[in-house]
Image (cartoon, rainbow, N blue to C red):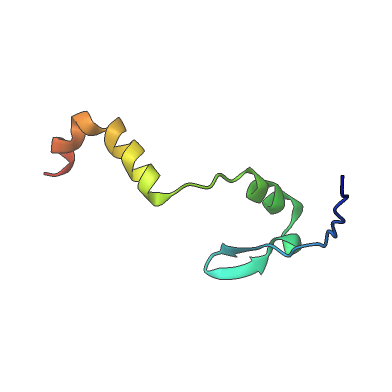
Length: 63
């Protein structure tokens, strides 16, 4: 069995805050915690869930 050698290097992660991209490692500790708790979602999936959830009320929302 061959052993693969891996080299791990730090990666700088950027996120957009108030219109500016900033490295996450420069944020204060509280904001970094908040960043790691975030959930990713696809806009299309959110739309499907929202329209399914409120399908009974859709006629009221269009008027």
